[in-house]
Image (cartoon, rainbow, N blue to C red; front, side, top):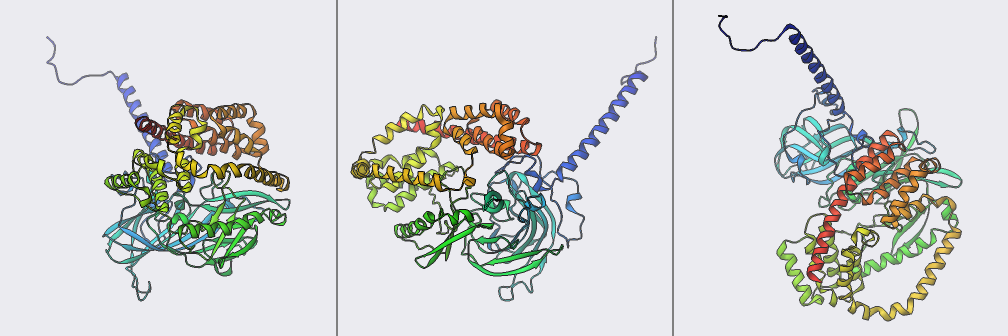
Length: 633
């Protein structure tokens, strides 16, 4: 009989050596992964743009550690500390917590753009912002928006004395700064809680990249003037791109006043919302001279209305109702009179809108850039200050919308025309941003058979008869339903305006064509972008997008050589507007893998994913509109 059995199991020496080797390999792999993870976690936020982070509401794994800690704080550099998992918190919410209310921004921006210098260093900017806030709830954690910016210093001073300014203010220690990338927040962890009802000043220094691929935040615009290649910088903050330029409370309800200062090369002029207050000179560490332009304080406004331009354009001006209007354009265009039309119509348009809405334009001047395009529209002018008339959206609860709809169906004229216009436009805008259901907005159109005001009908048609509805073959179901629904309600407005339309349509066509042909023979050839031809084909219809894609597949090298790789990026975005599946994204990713540099390829892939999600949301919206139309037609 053998020895008594014992618990456990036995392995041979060879198996034991094999297991030991596997364990060592596993530990080595874990060490390598930890090293790589730590390195990735310390990527500065400004590099996320080149590594494929989407431009709006990105969804990336993990949290972004800060680039640096505030200088005066004695603790170790936050960027050097290992990344930590964060529990669910306010940084996971889309809206800012209501702990702080911004009252005033002291903002200084210093873009390093120089004439004839488009190096990487020239396409960055630094800045400082001091934000005066009122604390409404005790908190030791501060959240504000920041995207693609490296925060280099963060301090909190206060409570502020209303009488003595910040001369006697204390200072709250900033224990840690970190970035919640998913919701685009900069988080400041303090050593002690702020006091409700007190005023504080957040002091932040930062740097970031000038956008070259998209017109978001502070972006670069290249053009040719007087036979030379030139560049300008301009801002596009709407809807949520102010956070790309400076840390801020980037929500439309959080209005504050702004004191804005721009440091720029002496050859350029700097413009902002308000007139210039003062100008001085400063010298950098290399001995180069820079101009410091400071502007008057703005009225209270949301961050998306802040506007900046740094350029060497020429301008013409006129006075309308005591306020200056300046039209800025290439010096060639100014000399050839191509800006005269814009100058002659801008003033009367403003006067008409003031009279129509019975609201006086609140600012002393307006800057208009008719040659600069910031969106996909063919008729898009950049106008500094245009929206400074207190523009806002009004939302109601479900019962409130129902009562308004009942009033419109009972007696629409009981609601003034301007308010009917605002109701319709607000409802569709709120539904697109998921504040109300699309059916709530559609219900407001039931009364339209009694609507005889053209401006209200214009708002309805702009929101319902969109370019995608007409050009996208996938909308074959909704289009006939919408046509039937609207035609039944167009009788009143048609009877009101049909005679005027018949009498003037020929004259209007003749005037428009004459103006267009005159523009074609007088405009500078440098202002014409031939890639617009390919874009026009791609935007014309779903078939056009396939035609443009096939053309690029066969000719991308020629397009890239003639217009640069950036033109390929723009065209890929246009072509990608109809994608809704992962296989379509994969097809375009494979298509662009040979055409673009790595950082561009990553950016395009992230943007295509965002476009896909938006398209899926649009398809769901269209399906709900079709269902509503079937029920109400």
